[in-house]
Length: 102
Image (cartoon, rainbow, N blue to C red; front, side, top):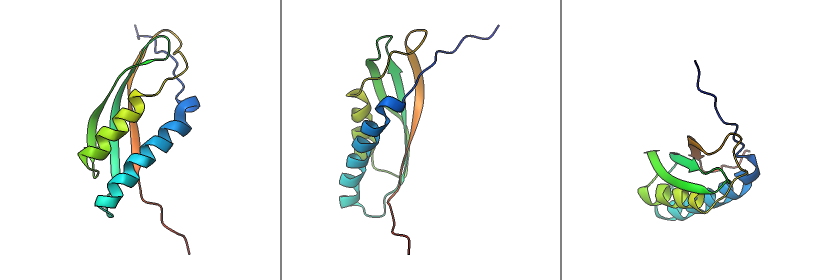
């Protein structure tokens, strides 16, 4: 019998998370202008929407400092209470340098 999955909506916090992750990335770009890649955050959210934990699960192409900073952005966040109680999952954060389109 399948285990029911709780419904979880990251959208209400998305803008703040993106802003924070982008700030981390821009600090990293100052040290390495060619840096780009992905950070995967392991996220645990409690039944009231509070972040119980947020840690770096994996990193590809960005520095450890950028990855740790991004995890701290998630730790400072809060979310709407997940339906069915707390939730655990992975969030993929892609960090790319914007380029001008001619």
